[in-house]
Length: 121
Image 1: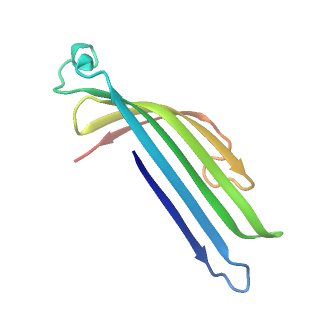
Image 2 (image 1 turned 135 degrees about the horizontal axis):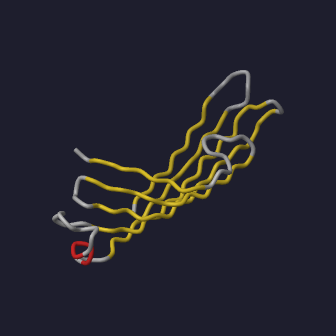
């Protein structure tokens, strides 16, 4: 499990101070043991692994806007599956739920399938 909490305030005279806060939490559960090595997923690889992953994050901004101090928040929850055919590669596939209050910061209220490939060198 991993996580982080951040927060800071920014002075913007003569406007009100802006406050920025956020957090994320991530967890994963490896499963399958040696079974993936005996399937088509593991053919040709030394130690393929599968893991279920979940992540939750939120960013909150209280800052100056058109009507004074505005409150904006964006939340995201992701659930997915990671496949590591080798220790330095990971293929990720998941679904992401997003929710926004006031202004869109990154993705707004758009939900959808997400995928990525990562390589550690």
